[in-house]
Image 1 (tube, rainbow, N blue to C red):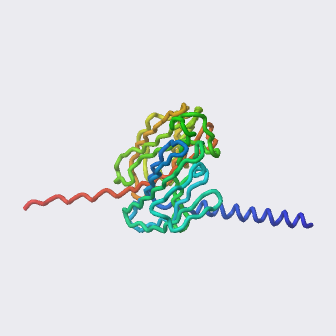
Image 2: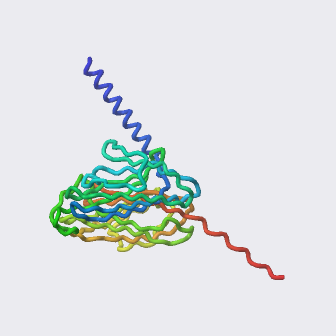
Image 3: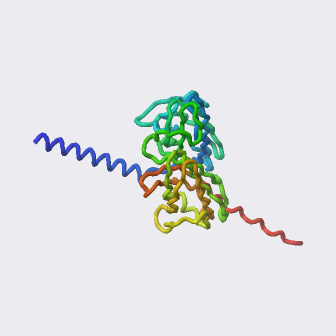
Length: 297
């Protein structure tokens, strides 16, 4: 009897947790932060790197950056030497460290944060950096840094342990934060392999919440396959990357709907087993009204 009661309670609790997670997933709305991160891809133990973060408000309303969360799987190889500007609070929850700011950004304003990290443990460290609003909705940037043992060349070097199971792709995404309705522009996504073994970039998925403001025009190099009609568009390359090799995809888009469009780019490894992702925000402004023609006397 007691076992049955305990089982019922546990199952009910799991159902409630599942419902809560499902509700949060469907109700969560990405904040319209346009984020840029500059992270050196490699460093030697004992040396320091500067990680630069920029958070821009592309909207016409106030946006608040409540906090920045950094996964332990990224920070595990480092000691945080300094943060500027200093956060109002710092604390660790589960598997990440939170840096609180409560910084209100006016329209078009950019807030810059700089971390100085000292490399203390060899390995390849990959993790997400989440930029959160007060409701704890967030956009994400994934970062990977290789830490080499002292005395090795800080590129491919000797074998290094890979932290966690996320593919340790080094990502570099370049896109304008603001375009005009009807304008063509290029989103460039570069992926590098910092490990000593070959890695496969299977595909890049783009969230529908990002792409529904745009139409695909041209993709170079041409993917082996593409799924653009339903759900999140997927571009398939199955590209094998040798140690130290990089791959760049240039995606030409046309802005077809005014608004602020935010979503993730997900980079999947071989057979689409695991991925890392980074968020992109692009504002599409309405085309300026044509000036009336002058009427002669």
